[in-house]
Length: 384
Image 1 (cartoon, helix red, strand yellow):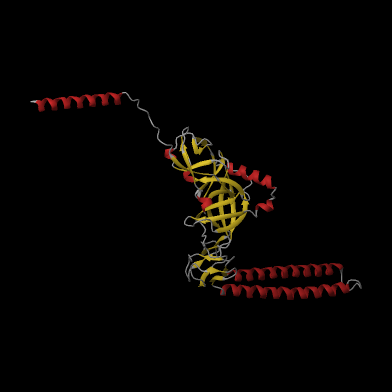
Image 2: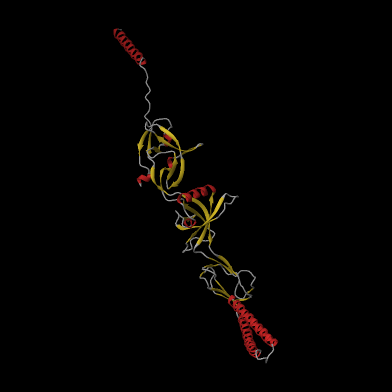
């Protein structure tokens, strides 16, 4: 019995001690410990020379293109090229039956010889009468007739000479030659076919070296170019030295180089664009007439620009922005105006300075107006 009461007193004492401890704990005050600022990676804008370009889309066009047409009628006698051949200026491509035209040349030369003989006789008669008139052995009217006969014979000879030249031209036209260096299309008539001077083309020829690239310039770009021209004092002759770079849709970069060749004197009111043209050497026939290409024209020499990684830019309804950490490590949102893209870097025309700390990694953890823990890192351009 005594042991039982002893145990009960021990339990009561322990309960009282626990109650006192719990009451003491409830009397302490709870305090909130703020989490540390989020870590972000920052980098200063890169300063490097950048060339600004006018970019457009154009198409390749041949400098020369022509249909090969027969100038005289006849049967096609020979075809002396293979479809798609590269040919030189003056190379014979078709020959039309020549025999009839050779005979016409012979006929015209015979008529010329006859007219020349007639003129010789008329000249002799005139000379004889001219010697007799002073002595009274011949009348003045006889001399006048001799003069008229001589002049008529001279006119007949001139006409015969012209007829011979026309006949020789027709004979030369039986050979259809290449008017310039180029590539000839598939023939449209076969050997033995009859062609006429007003018939369909025998084939077509296109020059491929050099080539034109036609493109258009928008109104805003045109105003920028005019300002650049005025600033640099360029003359029309200088403009034709402006380099133009061209790329096919599958090309990396702009491997094809040329120069500005032509600019239209007026702006197309319906489109607000100005037609322009470049000329490029094309020795390997890579640029085929009709192909669409990418075109860019430098707007001046390289100038130092500020660039940031393109991934650092954000977008909202008000436009593009960057997150910048100020001297107090507080995030600021900066509205920026963009220039061209240079690889993975974006030119910033307005909105940042050279010493700013731009957040390039951890943008989702950065809230404008709140502090961050900036970790400095080099931009990709500096690392390279």
